[in-house]
Length: 181
Ligand SMILES: [Ca+2]
Picture (cartoon, rainbow, N blue to C red):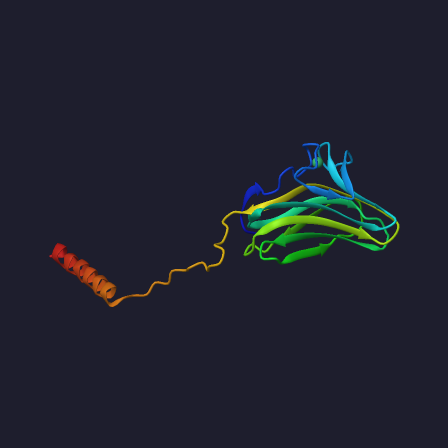
């Protein structure tokens, strides 16, 4: 596993400021039913609809996304989490129903820059309550250059270098002979 910088690119990742900012929480808010600390975010849908917990950042390379969640309930619908990359592509994965808090870990594409993360909840009927807490969007330890390739130096022996190496070798051989005499 590649080393990471141990820098969380998200602000207020565990909602412990007690305010939603800079998260965008639609269809929910903050709750004291947390994974750790005093607060978590939740989305609650009654009889259908959609909601989400979203945060945008300045585009940066991220090694992985982690967070804790619980909820879902056994009703028709989708609960997913996703990452928005600065090139316009997105990556989404399904979440399954979890009564107890469970963790998610997703390794990300480090050739791209993340500009937002989101947990997205939708249902057509019934009741859904989803809690999320303790997000970590982990910064890359060494962001790869964007728009270019990493240059790997390949040693190419030039004639000048070969002559120098041969001269050095013969000088050593001569020196050896002289000191031995
Ligand atoms: Ca918390």
